[in-house]
Image (tube, rainbow, N blue to C red; front, side, top):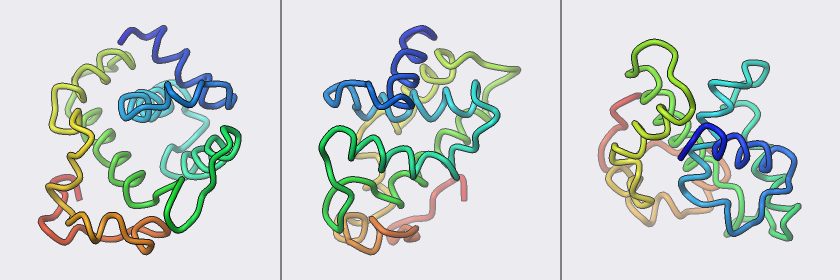
Length: 141
């Protein structure tokens, strides 16, 4: 993915104009990395939860106990993105950071199940607040 593609996705997400079908696993990470690298006025860990919830609603979705925004997945993914950035030399571009992340286990949309059981991660509790992994600690904790 190029810097221009990442900016288009992230800008569309921020403006709530990105088509729902483009809000993929990769798009979540691309947007998080873009925010971390290009929007220094924002803090992804603070701002993305509300942005994701608002985006979901703007696309006709809901944020409930069983759908929409998921706190544990979001925060774990942001920790993973920060860890990838911390491991890169210099000041990487969003495309360089995204490529590095996509070479990691986080490229697999099911990467979180190495740390959380499906039951725990998919629980209402994990959707509503941060829940620690129950299988093995995150390496970036």
